[in-house]
Image 1 (cartoon, helix red, strand yellow):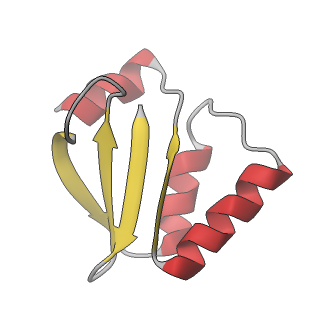
Image 2: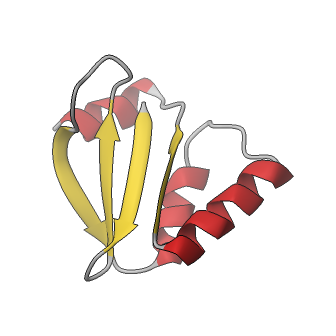
Length: 80
């Protein structure tokens, strides 16, 4: 699942399956970059040092994205 985020009155997040033309489900807004980062780290996605550095740079730019691995329960919550 592709997870994209950008800053606009908080951090807007969207989920898109690789085969889709656009976001899946509704957008969500989180208050802080830390809350967005925490959401990413709660998934089973491996996040090594290089990925953390890339995320830090994306948050500094105000936008970014990455492919996430989700548990079945997390996936169900995304598509609601």
